[in-house]
Length: 116
Image (cartoon, rainbow, N blue to C red; front, side, top):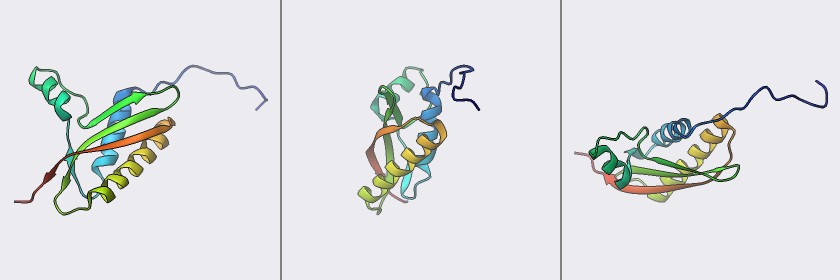
């Protein structure tokens, strides 16, 4: 290739794609029981609006993104350890699959799941 590359178009990664990647990565971490839509998502669903991906919110910065992950954890796990693992796994997955730097990943533990 020469020193100059020509652009052949633009690539845009939409929020729904980022939300899906983050949600799947978070849900795979041992100790995570499931994702939560949070109060805003639950209200939207009650009024007939479906949230496309439960448990994740994305905020775009200039050239990066910040994520909020809302989830439930299993009873008996060390919450800080599991939350840290969620942060790591989500950051790795989103950056690897989208090429967009993740500035921060905030984990919001909405509750604890108790086995029956």
